Amino acid sequence: MEFPAEPFKIKVVEPLHMSTREERARLIQEVGYNVFNLPSESILIDLLTDSGTSAMSDNQWAGISMGDESYAGSRNYYNFERTVRDIFGFQHIIPTHQGRMAENLLFSIVLKPGQVIPNNTHFDTTRANIEHKGGKALDLIIDEGLDPNSEHPFKGNMHLERLKDLILERGKEQIPLVMITITNNSAGGQPVSMDNIRETSQLCHEHGIPLLFDACRFAENCFLIKEREEGYSDKSVKEIAAELFSLGQGCTMSAKKDGLVNIGGFLALDSDLWTQQATNLLILIEGFPTYGGLAGRDLEAMSRGLQEVLNEDYLRFRINQIRYLGEQLISEGIPIVKPVGGHAVYLNAKEFLPHIPQEQFPGQALTVALYREAGIRAVEIGSLMFAHEDEETGETHYPELELVRLAVPRRVYTSMHMNYVAKSIVGVYRNRDQIKGLRIVEEPPFLRHFSARLEEVP
Ligand code: P70
Image (cartoon, rainbow, N blue to C red; front, side):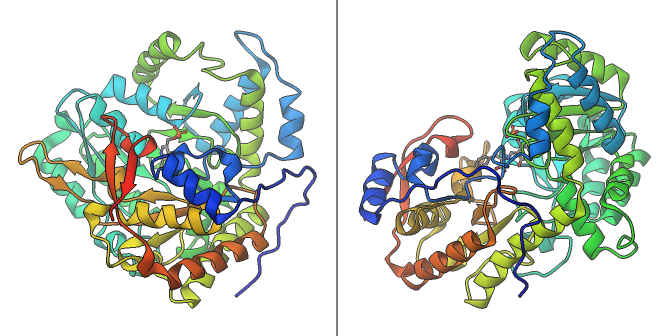
């Protein structure tokens, strides 16, 4: 196994905070067994998310000092627009403060109640934005994507036959657009192949339905295409991205991931009509079109981050660092989603904790144990995030996958930190039969995982 060396030097450091097991056990109980409620200073290694947690480069920080904070027409907007057009190729670019605002704008203008939006797998905010507007979010991933042990190289792929059946059944009147999430976050950070995107694009084109990308982790997806898909090893990641985006008509983007920034996003569209409608709404709820809820300096950092993320020495390190963590866990017999995907290692909580039934949130129970035993904050991607009641029968529908995601922030932790994480998880695995299930005490009406409170089942 290769030890991935960081292709950067460290210029500024931020101390980590140590705590004892007793302190953590008390705290996690106090916050209702929900790691979103923990103060970050009580955490040693924070793998809650790769979103907004990147370390910016000296070049980005220099850009921050070049902020043009004019209300309209900031030079940073023009730099940002040029960069996004250059990489993504879409006609119109609407900046937003983060990804979910791009989703909110998009679904506010295209979606009518009762309509459906298919995706390989919707992430939580996308699903919630669609449902909040009365639409139905459908996940149409290939079967291999739901099998944690399948080694299929593109487990994020769209199930083309199911998509075709859906289009034939509902028609374009009921499907305002089709989405593809790259990489497929809810199903293990797995990439989508160019071939699959091309076929999806053709199918959509034949039926006059636009195809849009959820592009948060586009550079990682394109790097994995370069590594795994025939015919792409000699192309640059930028060329691969250009080909990929040419197959769709727009994207939503949370630049908090592959934009290498702490805040920022955008909606990019080819359609003049949709752009006009989204811009009108943007001015009402987010900001003027040349800043869209951000400061000029944020746009500059985003523009520079989007260029830097295409650096292939960086991407090789990034993908290999996560693989390095995953392979250490595999070699110790710990059940994870295979192959290791783009931005995170996903523990398979169903196999890790076979004694905890799904209605007692095995993923959340494992997340709690990782924090209590080792000060590591992960996030549950399972029943707490996605289980829901069937509208007609009232029965609870549990997701197929019960995962705990160890999302690695970009350029933040060293490979030594990955060793610590791997060693700690091995320790938790050895004592896994001590881990208890959980039940919900309090929950909000949507996106409950962010704020629910739970207790241990004795
Ligand atoms: C994550 C965060 C955000 C996201 C995403 C995809 C594929 C849109 C968005 C929304 C959310 C999160 C989850 C658990 C813990 C903390 C944060 N994903 N599409 O970590 O983007 O957050 O900018 O509104 O993954 O995966 P935004």
